[in-house]
Image (cartoon, rainbow, N blue to C red; front, side, top):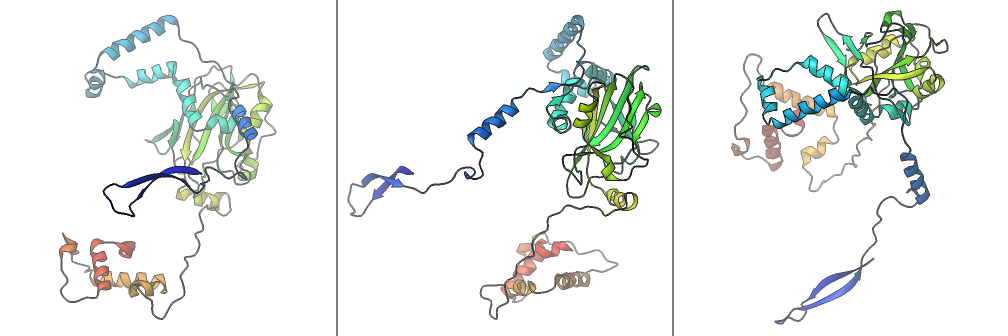
Amino acid sequence: MASITLRVFTKNISSHVKIRFEQVRCGHYLRGKPPTIALTLQQRLKLLEKSKLPKVNIGFSVPKICKEKKEAMMAEQKRKRANTNFETQIRSGKIPLNLEEVKKFWLEISSSYDIHKIATHYGIFQDLFGDAFFLPVVPLEISYNIDDDTLIKVYRGNVIKPAEASEMPYVEYKAEDDTLWTLVMCTPDGNLENSNNEYCHWFLGNIPGNKLELGEQIIDYMKPFPVRGVGYYRYIFTLYKQNQRLDYVEYKKDQPCLTLKERNWNTLEFYRKYQDYLTPAGLAFFQSDWDPTVKEFFHSVLNTKEPIFQYDFPKLYVKPQTWFPIKEPFNLYLDRYRDPKDIMKEYLLRRLRNTHPFKEPEPPLKYPNAVKFDKYLPSWLKVQIRKERLQWGRVNDL
């Protein structure tokens, strides 16, 4: 790779500076992945063609708004936009705001599109249905009862801890009595045997209308158990509308089902099998991460060891000790070869020596670096005292 660079020569000092342009060959820097790893042009074109495939809508169409109502809504929006102080008046309480009316308006106008947009952001449709999606036209009201006065609702990606979701939730939706529904709760994250499969946490079939207690429980409810060290798991509720009564005998498990292998689930295969009889209509999901109840759940309920994902850091390399370490602070140098428990014990005893059980601790120095030392001290000890005054280093471990 050649480039023209500017070189200034001042070998012979004179009133005129000699300037000359030279073409200098520079080293080559590899940009991107090496040829043995990078994709070929044909592979890139195939990926582009696959990403351009149209998504298939497998759900119901969203009911359209009548023309008169749409014109009235647009006129109302223009009136509010014209009022520059509308938001300030709402916040100050000068204009009353009924949240129930706002929620009803949102459910009627844009809830299906908003939920679809959020679910797409979280990768719900991609992980459950592949290249298919649906617009949730049936609002799901799902809540977990913690005590007599506290309910935690499932919205669209909010965080609910496993301890809060230990009991079966309350599910409500609007449906006619002569209709049949199927409700499935699953997670596409954290299958311990096969990453391509999911876990089914709850499966109710042939639900008459919105009466879940009269539905057929195929798989009983199991609380979330996100594994430690992995992060947040997504737990998804999908509501399907049935065209007829279905026989789910092949999915039915002995209850309580405490074997994770029997809870292996694949939403895409399930829908392909019953796509002529099922239509997804409702969606809600939450996230959950590890808490101490997960450990107890693995040991007491599943009767197995708790899996933990963590990085095994290599043991710190300490070079062999030398007789005369040059340019090494000897206190830190010697601490490398001591037992860390002995070092912590030394710091603890030093702190207890200056702590009185019936007196308040001495206030910290206002300007630690401005306080001079009373007597001559070696440089390494001065550094150590300064760190203790500023609360730097290993003293913070206590």
